[in-house]
Length: 66
Image (cartoon, rainbow, N blue to C red):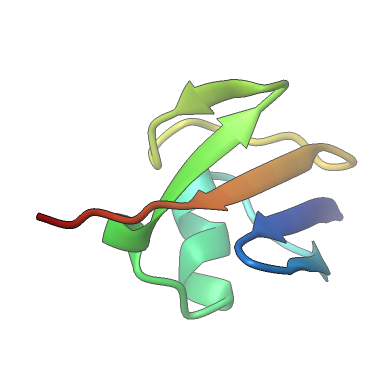
């Protein structure tokens, strides 16, 4: 089970099962890839990065503007 913390204006936490890659987490939680940066151990990682069971992944919401 992977512990997922979504960091946007408020902190939301999930436990996600049966995932092998970060992309799987985005799909299971129905989250747009373009709206978040995945952080593993505090470092940005691509969505095709493998993830181990019992890991913690942070998803940092990104904003842009002009």
